[in-house]
Length: 122
Image (cartoon, one colour):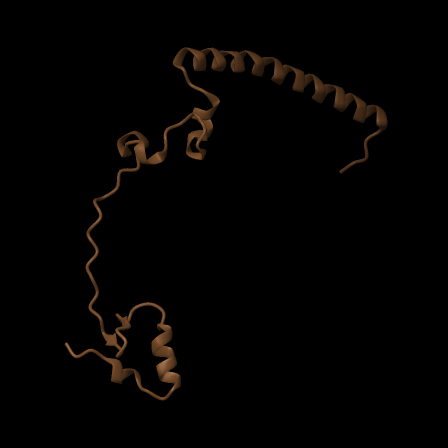
């Protein structure tokens, strides 16, 4: 990038400041229009920021907004089926065989008892 003289930089700064003032001049009427429209419709800044979800006045919580209004329609959830127990010990501890190995079964295996000795015959 070529070096600019101090005079050239000052001219560029003045040009950019003029553009900034022009942009701010067009922003002010737009902000005023929005304020007037918000007042007319009874909309608050909280409505726009979702402050009610924090317990403040404003937008209603998401659970009360219909999925049609938000466009997030979802399919009906299927009820979860219970998973059959595959392992059980003498104390009533159970495990379905899914997820992390339970502590009681891990300890039993460390003590030399095999997992198959706890398997439920179904």
